[in-house]
Amino acid sequence: MKTSLLIGVLLMAVVHSIVNIGLSVLAFPVLSTVNGYVARGYLAAGIAATTTAIAGALFVALLAPLGDAFVAGEGGGHFETIALLLERGGFFGYQISMTLWGVGGLILCSALFIGRLVPRALTVWGFVGYIVFVVGTVAEMFGFGIGVMLALPGGLFELSLSFWLIFKGFNLPKTVL
Image (cartoon, rainbow, N blue to C red; front, side):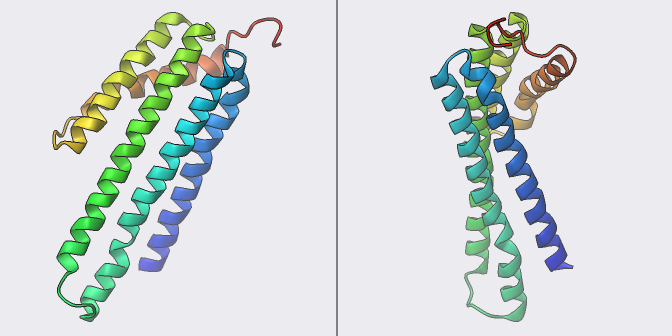
């Protein structure tokens, strides 16, 4: 049971990582038409956020072998301290990765706004959503449990942007087409 659970978690992490970094890679050519530095910044933010999320997930995954050692009576009496450190490492890894993803979203919105790649109202909504999102992730790290609630505007922007891109696509300059 535990092995299949760990394999499932590992597979989800791999798929999540490929999709997150893939999104940044796929956006790179379009964002490069606006500004190469912005495109590289968005790619770097996506890679940094995903790498940090993986590190945080590893902390949580280490709880399983720690639990096995505890049940087997191995390793002394520091299990609660180690478990707390692993849990907090996972928590902070996740929150830092989401903060980085929010910063990446702000970079994305700046390219969308400057390049007029989507309607400006949608981009402004994204700016506001990501600012609120970053405030929520930082607040979580300081013990204020408001991150999920403050993720809603940014999440709704991402859904709206997704639908816009599916049905309308980017407003690319004719020279790029």
